[in-house]
Image (cartoon, rainbow, N blue to C red):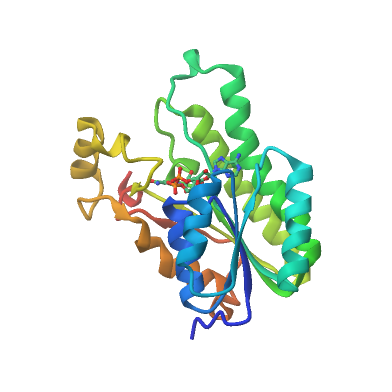
Length: 246
Ligand SMILES: NC(=O)c1ccc[n+]([C@@H]2O[C@H](COP(=O)([O-])OP(=O)(O)OC[C@H]3O[C@@H](n4cnc5c(N)ncnc54)[C@H](O)[C@@H]3O)[C@@H](O)[C@H]2O)c1
């Protein structure tokens, strides 16, 4: 079960955090990995740790030409593409009144347009039986004050996932979204140290702790594998029981 030998996966934003954890887990199951990220040094260091054939591609999701060229190189170098994990994302915490238009647009460009462009250009290169996993957030379906741009971008990822599931089902491509709660990664390491976040975890997360990046790995492997063949259009929370009672 969960055998990914002979599969080729693109994982965006895998130079660290949840992306690295998912890329490593897929590689442990036998998948070859193409990492797309802007952080070259960190991304290459991740590739060196992977046991299967893997390669780092310096890709900025804000640049469509860059995305198209990198996807074509993956197809050329690995021969095929079976799995796309849209994971790269950015987060700003500002109230609506002090959110600059440029910051709003950048979050949308990376977190939503980046996922759309990656899928648009990867799907024509996939065989029947492909998998797309979009990393959203619990903030995609629950509003938290002070991060309207992020919440909106992650809500858009949920709708994008459902629409992709409908449009790609005839091509045999399963599309699902994962909504993490609070995980310790470079994105959240400062935030998770604040009293406000510690109190929130104690009060609202049923398991009373944040997740470790590795705790998303099993779900990513399952959604990438043949075992999830009857699952598409699903939005799956992985949040230590944070939002089930909100
Ligand atoms: N950590 C959490 O608690 C949490 C919770 C919910 C959702 N998420 C989501 O999970 C995903 C991964 O988050 P993480 O916590 O591992 O964050 P992270 O900051 O550790 O990793 C994000 C990666 O995306 C890359 N990236 C950023 N902008 C890019 C761009 N323009 N082009 C290419 N790569 C780019 C970064 O270089 C980085 O390696 C994100 O989509 C995030 O919104 C995280």
